[in-house]
Image 1 (tube, one colour):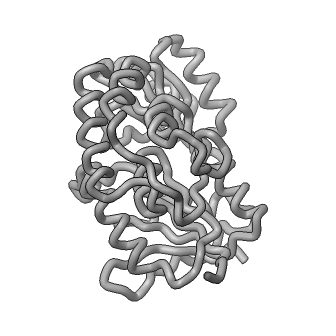
Image 2 (cartoon, helix red, strand yellow):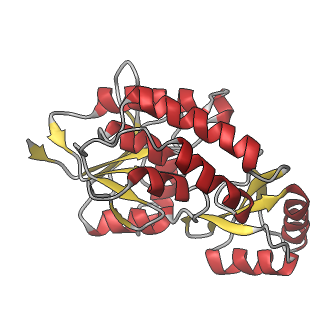
Length: 264
């Protein structure tokens, strides 16, 4: 099998299209299967909850087990996660966003995702996010509330990790058929890894998507392909890869189209 320099990207929840986590994962799997040629991609890279879709597409878990994982995760978050959480994106770099979080001073507030230069997500209690929005308004910083009512990648989900991992204990892990890069552990996954634990722990770890994109770029990635309904992650790629800001976003011509950019 020929190895390509393509990187396939998998988004998290797609609430803009009314999709549940399960629907978005199933949609991503279909798009990936339509887009991948008879070659081995450079990497599969999931953003946040898209990590599971990447693992399913790589063969670590079956699609049915992927559905079971999502159902168990949603139940555990509802039962053990702290209520009244959410996420906002700021047009600030990580350091500046962390300063805002520190100024607010809520222990549940955390830097959740470093998506691109000057694109950072904070996650935490709704009350703290209101203070973040006020702070951003006074500083003339763009602040957008994300359509998510869970504080992913924050301490508010710390109590979810142990019971969720125990619930998933009987789900088998299979050999990876494609390389998967983790944006939370910052390395390629291995068959020796406990990928269920990695996936559960990713719920509370920050997503360093910008660093992952730059790592792929350093490995010679020549096409980033997003397996989702909107070109969200490929636009972050354009912001992250030097010189790629003005690159056009293309759409594949298939039954289940993907979005892609060519950085080189």
